[in-house]
Length: 188
Image (spheres, rainbow, N blue to C red):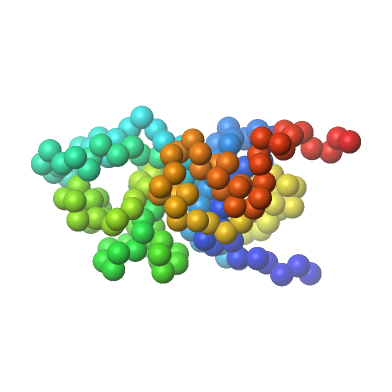
């Protein structure tokens, strides 16, 4: 029997031929992976929605803050009405936070949004609506069909690179040039 590999704090990189529209050319940061399943945030799908639009809906006062201009990401197809803030750890605690590593956490409580808009939030943030989720064994099965590449995550790719470069950069950490991969499998 194969031992399960924990993919927490890894990138899940869609191969070029993955036809699922939810994950076509995506890089997903895996926040949690255990026997019950996996949860991640797609890091390269910005929407045209900005934070201040979300804050209006939540009735959180913005006071003309410049921090409300950051774009919101489509974090995945599950619970797209729920917000997730992927962020660096700067020593502050929020009401509902999952510490993924010493450097990166994901928070789902409104208190972090209030801090971000006040200019007192974490150094780096990626705010997403929805997440990518897999039931127990599902992700392992998909990896077995070669639908994904996976490898250790890099904070700089999540928070510093332009969105359109994150997919290829995540694969580049593995020494793979996605432009050289065929979108087809099983043909010689």
